[in-house]
Amino acid sequence: MVENIELRHLRAFVAVATELNFSRAARGLHLAQQSLSTQIQQLERELAVQLLVRTTRRVELTDAGRVFLEHARTVLEQMSTAVERTRRVAGGEIGRLSLSYTPTLAADTLPVLMAAVHRRCPDLSLRVSEMWQAESVEAVRAGRLDAGLARYPEVPAELASVRIRDEPLGVVLSAAHPLAGQEVLDPVQLGDATLVIWPRDFSPGFFDRVLDAYRSHGFRGRIHELELLTSGSFLRDPGALALVSTGEGFTVAFDRQFDPLPPDFVWRPVEPAPRIAVHLYWRREATPAVRRLIDVTRGISRAEGWLVGPS
View 1 (cartoon, rainbow, N blue to C red):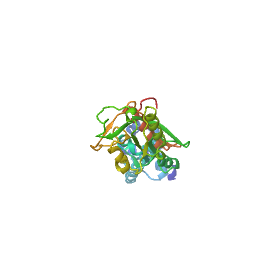
View 2: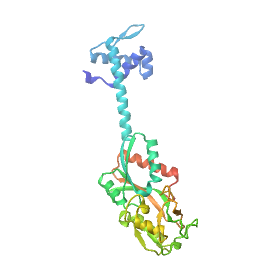
View 3: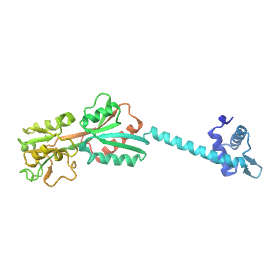
View 4: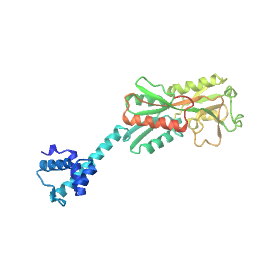
């Protein structure tokens, strides 16, 4: 019966049919010649067909043997491909990942990570969406997304996370602001100016970290939350833009967040600077593709020196 034919029979036949010599074929398969002969005999018996003509001087393929050789090679190649792809899927090298990111990661962290995934896992396709933090966390928790990137996310118990980056947060001022000429600012110098920032509801951890850092270092100004919520930040929000343009207010930003920053504004580092952590988060029952993403992300974090302290 055909169902009794095994891959070892096909490998044995292909080896003999290729070499047309039992001794060489046996050596190539690391088999005893008698064992190889037995497998060929079993194959011919199962097929009820003679595949090889053997004499003391030579081995030749029959017409049936030539047809079977073509199909046997195809079967072995298909099996090899199936095994390889199965292992790669199980290892997270093949598949699709849906990933979200918050707007301030678009200029630097996200492109570096995406390039690393494409380089190391070229058969792993990405679907990447910009989302506000609260929306992203809920989408990952509900299974609509595989993973998310955000700063100080509030991660529920169903999710796991890893800190991958610490970035110092600076400020954006009007180029005409009296402090714009300084290379480094102290938060106390911002005194009673208005801080323009994302609404707390969209990123509570980020909001609280920034405000605590500025309040603890002498900042006494009021808070203006953005009303027009786009990735353009204060540049697209008329009220926020007016506050920063006139020098009444300032906003917080990372060094490469705006690329480029319009000439009417300047970015300046702050000392002491609040360091804002970036986290990758995912459902605890991670798929192989997500586990591969975690490995790549941790590797890039180490290679780029993104973390200030232990992760």
